[in-house]
Length: 307
Image 1: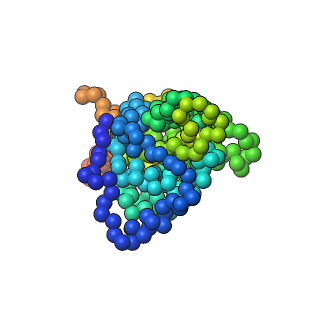
Image 2 (image 1 turned 30 degrees about the vertical axis):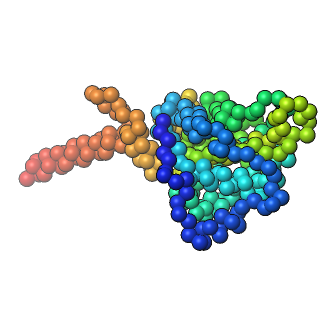
Image 3 (image 1 turned 120 degrees about the vertical axis):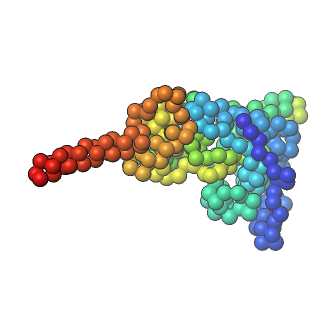
């Protein structure tokens, strides 16, 4: 696993970018907040390793850590919108506009996962790395039994996900929200991740010890972003490795999808030397060439017989 860190967390900002950041900064009424990266020496290493464990098992490329993406996550956590979530122990996603227009984002489109946890009373200090690893760890193997392979946004991919509401219009959105971490953390085309977490809010029930935080918030940004409506998260081969059915639940692969994932598989799942593929694009084109050759030989023979 690799940590990719630039010499400085953020590139030099223009006056326009600086004004953008000021407009997004928290007001004086924002809740008291402590960031994990400020207190945890191995914050990036710990959460990156947890992200990469299920990816390595599935044969996917490991994520690299990106400080700029972690900075985007931090800016969202300390925004006015998020500061009021500390007292309710809830979280909301940033808008697509926030991510695409952020001046330090190295990608046009960022995927995002966001989770919150209301902290029970305890005398010992909370471990931000451990809490983040517990959250991210639930997205891999534990979630796969509730997922079907298919395109992001399709109802059949999350039919088995348990949610509190039975209303059809609300169920799909709720189920996708539960499963978003699984799909984004295993999205084949995503290469980099950056996360920030924070403790905030005051636990009014705390009557002993020094630990008084009420809420733990975690936001991760991914680039290039996954969870794109109508796109497959990974190849049928990866689906098989994960124990999923390799045929998408929402319909067979289109020609373009087939060619894309065949090419992707050949780069990421190379066959041992001396073993030929059984259903690759090269086989397909080879069979066409062989058929054309047979037709040409037959035509040539007919012409000779005719003459």
